[in-house]
Image (cartoon, rainbow, N blue to C red):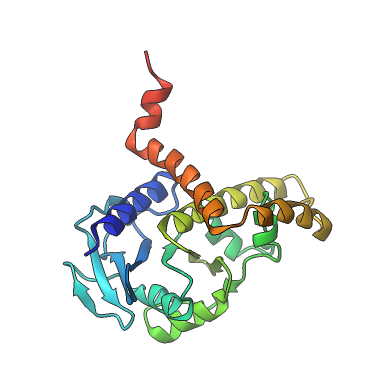
Length: 242
């Protein structure tokens, strides 16, 4: 089992729990480095409580090949996305409160904040079938709806968020929550003042200029470092120095 990946998954779970994105339920996974046909995922337990001993290695066919414990019932979400998206190296399924709300709302969860204006300009699509995603057939439907997108909603259930690595996936989930929080509050004041396509281009141009893999990774790592400091207590110590 890849120790560095397990360590980062554990920290990712801690950050997502601190942000109320995962709790007793949900799962964060990552491809095993160098093995496109295997992934690491927390076993069937609260991901918020996961330690480095609580991850298993699974094949895309659902076989546990390393680690102790039973896999999550909805492992097919991860397996199907990895099979369909070679560019994705980390997947999150959460029951985030506002993802559930917007999955049942007549108002689409659209991008309203900075680069999300472009990323989610048309609104996140919604997987509408009832029931848990416990078999490859349902997993494949989720992956098909996701397509080349970075996130989708599951009706009355939560969301699926993907990224090029654990940091990108976890930070995108935080951004999705923040975007949903702002839109939810704006709706309380009336009709949202959505960005026009021309406005969207204004947000998109500077992002495209800085969209090299190195620049985007640097931005994600900067945000990750902040949330890591929160969950490890380093930020609190810095703020309350004598």
